[in-house]
Picture 1: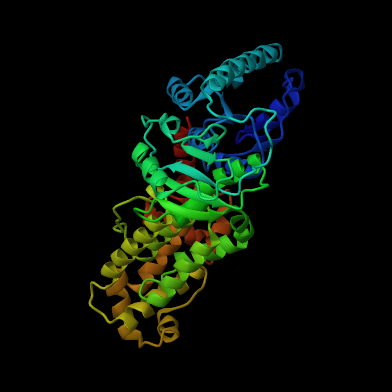
Picture 2: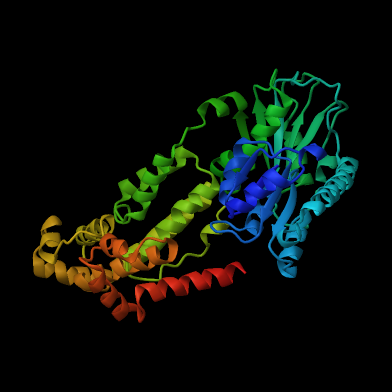
Length: 478
């Protein structure tokens, strides 16, 4: 069991009070939001996930959508504070087998709740077992006897897709065919044929299901079947993200090499990559742009981590350029594969170059102004003036002032003021830091001066702004 709720007391209460052991259940983890839950699921086997609906960072609905795709065998149960019909219907549509209403969860009803949930799991398990095809019997070997196999991964995300196509594959008696997760199949021929998947077979597979990727797997002999299935699930969500090329449908992969070569990435590495891309050093420099892309690809981050880097970086780019006009054809959330990310980065770069080159300055001049903008963003508390900043980028005061306004759309001092106010708004909305500390963190000498300037720019005091944001967040959660 994994329990997900942003209220720590609710999580602890459920863990302690519910009669889990009586029903053969065990809570092995807890998480405060959907993102933390997904991180937990990457390294832990979970059978049942109980999740709240309204949570920060990632809601329960978003979590369920993701789990439904990545971990289709996990049973989903909704934990809600009130019987919101729309949310409950959405959760049931996403595959939740039941829901628990917190206000109705009295001690004497806990047995009834778990009895109902386990009954529905038993019922649904029967349905699943009746539809499973070609799965190994319990007395079959746990390891592969053959040295090669093939993974078939459907790229079709349409809910109405044909899920019967594996039954039409050219199977031999005794072939091992199992579904690692929805649309991801592992097919191994135990007959010992060295090269059983011929070009004719490949063509036949693509005729049966055109929208699949075929991955020939080597080094399978002696490999544990369950380990191969687990690797395939992980490869679908991480490895294929970087391997897939537009239009390419056939790949060769060594399981042993894949496992050995997977990079180890620490939080500091991700933070450093975020800082690099948040800056604008890569916009007008081809070498830096290509290097940043290559190093990011080598890290092989998950789709979620890529999105977190660029959602935040995108907001920083718009603040740095004083614009809300950065436009791309495809939003970040729609990018599934690395080649799509490369196209997106190229598109956003062209948009930035067009935006900053409107004044028709030379590339070195634009790079100098963007460097100044980066220096401001790196430490918004610094009290650097126009003369010092012009000197830091080797430009005269008057020419720097004119170029800065033409390229970034605002005079130097106004630009710094707006960046500080924007940072203050972020801290007021997302943290509980005292206002006097926010004044310090945004480069203002005292709270009184900060509050007066903040009100002039936003029309309300910092405390009123914080309260308004808090009320808006509560309404959104409800």
